[in-house]
Length: 259
Length: 300
Image (cartoon, rainbow over all chains, first blue to last red; front, top):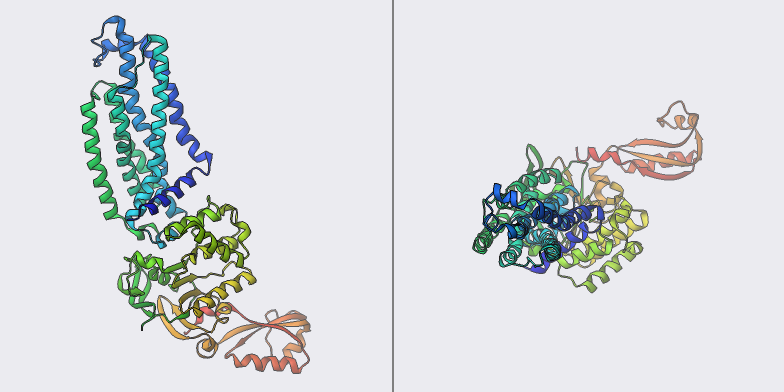
């Protein structure tokens, strides 16, 4: 396997995406805007609603906190256990458009033929297509984490006189981002290689987004506690899932299906 | 030694449609032309040779290897298909550099080859233009340039001059002749008889998914084409009555003066006989062109 060929395919795809602001603008602009707005929203809730929420839902570390510390405890909980999972999944959701377009777009625009006539193996091609979505998605996620982390700290220092981030579990979440992104992206790229066109690929991609929302919602409702141990287990499981998905993608990929 | 491309009893189906039915073909060094009407299976045959399609029956070997499974063979193959398959939002340079990288070519080697080919095709000035902004003809030139970037040993061309002007078409034909001179194999698909007659080459005729004839281009009119039409254009309008006296049937019988006549002939030698008739009656001939639609009657 010649990895530079995969990078060439990825670079070509990324270049195509970034050739038009109308394609990449909403895809990256909306998550980045949310990364600035959501921390402000969470501060508002922490100041005004934290005690009542802590009474209604048993949130780890918040419900048990003394009344004076309930606001900062809520801000800490919300910043890590709610915003963290949201930002872990949000960029993957938005970059699904690139993944869905990967093979289906080549097929629809009838460019797959020249690609298949080139000396690129199935694994090089698939890896290239996965990297084309993975690289921008992960870089954007890191950017979103950096923006929301900075804003959380600025706000918490201004209102509570303390910095909240980074914590170990927050950093572990950041470490899990590439692996969490890889599984759905691989799956969408595989779907994209097997459908007739972009619309069909996007339709199926939107169904895949639903399971991804389990993480932020279960954390928001206090059903899952995103401890370091839990996140490390998640990382280990994702490594296995990612490898299996890539193997299955290569094994089931049919060149002829792209023409 | 066998030809670079050997097909044995190849059948290719698309659901209920049989595109190729038991085709056996062995290329020779130099130019091999595949002629046939629309839907004859010409493009499918090229795609089977290029390894784009998995065949249902038979075998295909290119330089001794199965092109569907061999990645290595693609370094020695080049194919220009009926769609240009270029990336619209990239420039010509970016497109060519991308494919160059896939063929393990350095940036310098890719650009050097690209400039040489594009210059000959008078398209070098478009190297930094986005593909979507190019005309159909220029896209075809760029696609041809991409096809020969790797200097393939086997060159497959599907209607390579379809949208080109006369000068660029001549350049493409020169490229093919150069490949022939270097002992390489060119398989060239067309449905234009005019194009075929510009080569002294092996000619295979495909019809209804079967190879119906294997001949030479210059024997086409003698052995294959029968009962076809020619347009004879006059240097100035000729009275219709005069033509009727010569036994010519006119397309528009009510016309008083005509610029040209369409004559059905049975054999190419009939053209001389008819022309002699016109010349002896004092009519000057400007041009003689055969008409293309006779492709459907090939080898019937």
